[in-house]
Image (cartoon, rainbow over all chains, first blue to last red; front, side):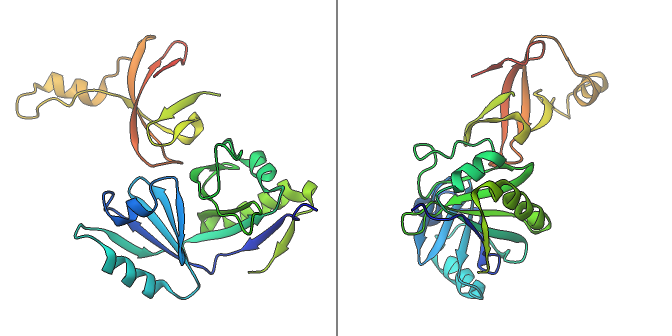
Length: 169
Length: 78
């Protein structure tokens, strides 16, 4: 039986934005458009920007770890946990829901596990990270906090025909 | 739908981009006449022809890119 569709609020996860150092270790770990799991999730969000997604309350540890790992260049490391809404859309029908709200090709060949893209989702700028869970299609969706409720409402509306369920974190 | 090809993100819907303006060379401030400077600041060609433009990929990589577009047909080169 196909995995049921569910939307999970992951906003409480620590989110640390790193800007600069496009030639450094972060770029080698997760180039633009790719994400890599290494305890935390390192997301290549921009050509010179990365987002580190880690367990709740670990911002200080993440900032210290990034600072310790930098290779001499100037970078900016900011805890943006409370600036963004983060939700996870999981289930076999997740690509079908995304196809209804954005114009990016989410087929396996174009957006495999670990792919990252930033685009318009239902008219708002959002970042999408494909982060499969145990072989089930799963996407992390990140947008400005002020658009969070709107994004959730749009996803629930688009997922209604697939019996989407809402799960607490 | 108009597609613009971003060097970082590939072909994307033009709605993800902001139009910045025609691409023009900035004159040397120390040598430019007032007319040249005024032309740089305020005058636009706006010809129904191929024009190099600056666009900003706001809802993508946040980079500026040059787009060569025909202002009569909206056709995009490259």
